[in-house]
Length: 103
Image (cartoon, rainbow, N blue to C red; front, side, top):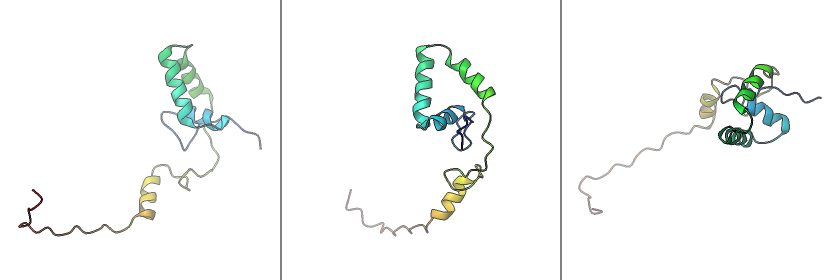
């Protein structure tokens, strides 16, 4: 299957453009974001203009791939994760108010 440059659906900060570029080159999206911020602050070229052009031109990934959490719904992924891994809360121990020997 041929690799295609698309915006990321599972790792989105603003538009998913930088994460899509990172997925295309198989590197960590954080590295691409750091390089983008560094080049923007240093003023090499015009990274902000390039980002806007890429955000407009690069298509969104429309494949039905699952995200890192195992399902497609990006809005409820944290709630599902908490429900699967939740365990009952531990009850607090009752404190005897007469025992202030630590102070």
